[in-house]
Amino acid sequence: MVGERYEVEVGPVAHGGGHCVARHEGRVLFVRHALPGERVIARVTEGTTTSRFLRADAVEILDAAKERIPAPCPFSGPGRCGGCDWQHVTPGGQRKLKAQVLTEQLAKLAHLTPEEAGWDGSVEPVGGKLPAGEVPAWRSRVQYAVDPATGKAGLRRHRSHDVEPVDRCLIAAPGVAELGIEARDWSGVESIEAIAATGSSDRQVVLTPRAGAQLPLVELDRPVSITRIDDQGNVHRVHGRTFVRERAAGRTWRVSNGGFWQIHPEAPDTLVEAVLGGLDPQWGEMALDLYCGVGLFAGALADRVGEDGAVLGIESSKQAVIDARHNLAAVDNVRIECDKVESLLPRTGITSTDLIVLDPPRAGAGRETVAHLVGLEARRIAYVACDPAALARDLAFFREGGYRPVSLRAFDLFPMTHHFECVAILEPVAE
Image 1 (cartoon, one colour):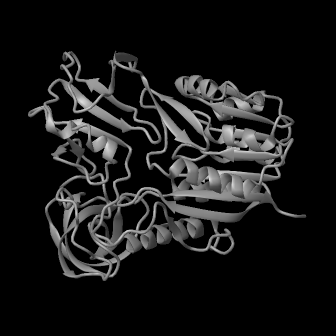
Image 2: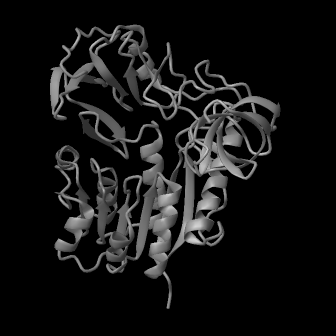
Image 3: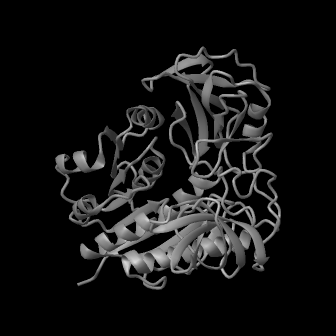
């Protein structure tokens, strides 16, 4: 059915992918480049006559929503770059769509209203509000793909391995744009991650060569560290350091080999403030930092619980653990262990704690891990979530174990995309 066109009335926004829900002759269509309440011509991009649903793009807008604006990015639109979902929406309209998604997921999976979740219903802008049509250059880490036919760097099209050639990415941070990735020939390279650290001048380019190809001579527009990843996933230094230095929460953080770090420059401080504000750590308390990465929350907690308190961080990435131990080497009340949370936590012998912060991967923590956490009888738990569905599922598990959210904040840390970040604070239900 690919290529079929239907005139449809667009319904509510759906979770994930920047889609809205529409229906045609009883069949569900997930339509990109549309907005709730619009009447559009939708062209099918995926699906067959036996599919449960179809995917489609809005290729003609018959009745436009008031939040619609012309997309500022010349590479945005049906069949084009898939990196942004909401280029055609005002900034305020984007946040309303994200709030609608969170409201729906809380109701569907956690059986909570916004009021019951302690949420005021808003998605908070970060870095100040912008006028419609202006694009914030926030993305400090950009993953480029390389077109094998031309050697030019670009961005993936939505749900495709095809490369959309670009001469610039509007949401790329200035430090990424300065590298001039789009302007050179990358023949022999499969992908490029360009990193511009916040709070330092460090720049890094991580290259993944094509199988059997020789790495090209790389000359960029400014000093930069270069590393490459081989077929086995091993990292090799080509030039300069294999890490960048980030600055947040009053410390400098080493992040190696393109490892995980929040990609909005203001995200680390924003999330630390939300976590500490919600937990209110006290001197002498014991805290757990689960899925701790390079130690951001562990370090912030250690400062607040002091020398009479203690923080245990658990992280499964070996390199992240090496970085975390380096970053917090001078902090005596922190210990970082390397293993999966669900494997190590039951073996620690810890039977109780005062505070827990967890920042799990997109899939969430899951029922078994949540069950173990509620058994530790923490005074408060901070849950940092990048996926509203996973958050809602885990909130339901916490509710089964006797914990309820007392506050929930949502942050627009990924403007122009459907992504956002949440921080939920949970407490045990009083008997």
